[in-house]
Length: 326
View (cartoon, rainbow, N blue to C red):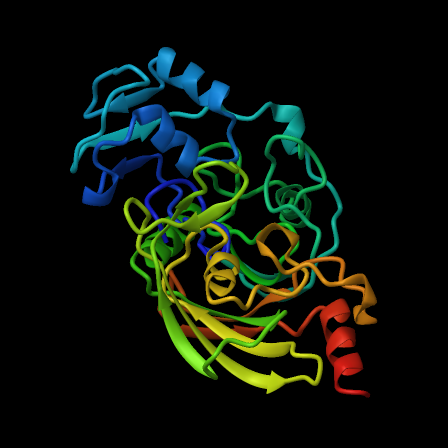
């Protein structure tokens, strides 16, 4: 996310759903879902009531036609969603600090600080990375939805690390297509609360919205979307924790966090998925210890192969040094 490639608006870890297009095709595994449930699952940043209003107002169409919220989707259906443009005042430039790893006239590569929300959403109408990017680029960033200028993919609020930002429409469309077609490669560093049974492995488990807890994702064998992650343990610690490198083949929402919890090795500090640190551990962990460390892609304009690494954020580095006894 991120840990997010899917066919709807922006992913997290992700890719998180790395395609900004508001038109997408229904896969066989999604056939039979009600339209309103499908939208709720795929656009978690929007409330159920707001999505229902879009359906009623004909801003959602299936195969070019207006349908009711209870319409049962069929394989191959084309669903288009037109979101209202954000209020102008919510996208005013703000000075927000973030390290810039690379910049040219077409794109930016940055390292997102932990705790920074990527784009405006419910409860976060200011102080986001988008507001900071608008300040950094003097307001000149491309957008296909009016809400996420420059954003090609995203990371969860408390995940730190490398992100790619488009500065013109050609780059935006090119990078979105590369994410969707899995031509952009990302890897993460993660501290895990427990070690997996094997030192390395591959997880292929479909992911979807949790059936009860709306803020969570879950392994959904019957109706989830294909998701694959690869891990390798690079360092073990005396208290049972470990440091892993994780590469994702897809970019589903919360992908790494859900997959590692599924193998009983949740990301350290991830309270949502079982990674909370016991008070008597002797360590204070205030966020999930997940960092997007490397990014490999082809420049969308001149075709050059690009590769970048974002150093670990200070809190994660200090925790590692404490675990190593440094």
